[in-house]
Figure (cartoon, one colour):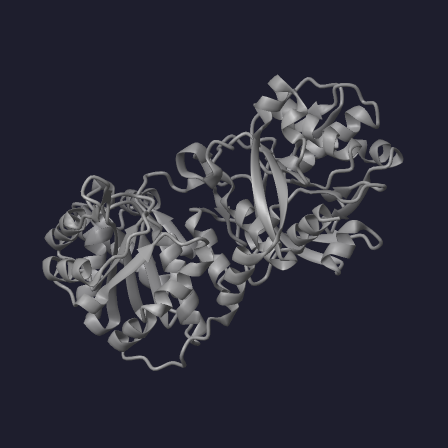
Length: 529
């Protein structure tokens, strides 16, 4: 029978529930348990695919083509899990499913209500999506007190009652704000948050206390929380800021959180050996060499927009024993002010994105990297930008462009995919998920992957226009990987450059700190030469 850990958050959002859930899963997986994680998102969108990165950060894409919350990226990076469409659902999906059933007459004339119909749908999705695991961690997005999350919390209350104490545990994560005038951490917001939980009928079995400042959460503070929040003192867990997120499994294990959870579940598994995490943290903290990577994008004001990308670069730093200094550069600034921002950097990376804002600045960045032989990596839109720049400046196709940015260009070297031409809906209609690619031997791509067939995750509508393959190849562009039927260009590169490669897919989604993606590892290695 699957055991359940329900993770909720209080006081404020963005406390790190996803990271904490991932870290707990990492420890339990290390002990030999089969652990699953699921994220419940209270917003009414069916998925985050159509949401602006400024609204919700990165959209993480799974192998099966589901557009999901960025926390699923944390779940995959900390564990050996591969997330699926069953790993994340939203209020929008729940209501859509229930309303569609009502329209089909499946409720036999009953009044459809939040309880039991919505809550039953939520419970069914949780149970069906986690049956294969020893322990399932269910993270509820948002903050206790939000009206949107009430159906999720009510469903958890019912599930805890149905499963019983030894089979279901609640962990509540809260903030202990620091008052400078009093020079102390305050527990009242945590008390109020737990009180809100109790009014719903949920008792927190553990409280994880976040604090931004480097002030000890003392025994006295923990005892006060224990008294007012009605749980054992030993179940109040400290989670001060750490220098790297990959230190979190070590911090939680030092407080014996995994042991306490397994004791309640009456499970006996080998002790955790976190040497791999200690080695990762050591390399991040103590590497002596630094390399500076310029990330040229349009969402640089919110770095969460590139969360998986940032972490993949960190993983590559671990692989090469080097510290990564990320310099986020607005492509619009390059358009308006020139390329000065690109000077004194060791590598240039252009990530994915949509729309024409800042495109010309990205084209200038590619040209600067190509002509000055600065290591370059383009991802998704970054590959399309690299093709446009090469077409304009090397193949002399004046004003070559993508039809996404200029539908009347004389040289549409990037065009909408044929399968996308008649699609009008925006949600979940792109080329999504894992697809195979075939790599040509004797290319940089082959040297990086050391294999011919690979599988990577995609999220795009536009593609390399095959009508321009011949002319671009005659001018020196190397198409180093395609789809198995040779119809879609997946990777391009150029010769006589230390490292210039661009890919149509998103390799960042498959990188882990203990298994860095070879593309990023190769890119960072090239910046050190």
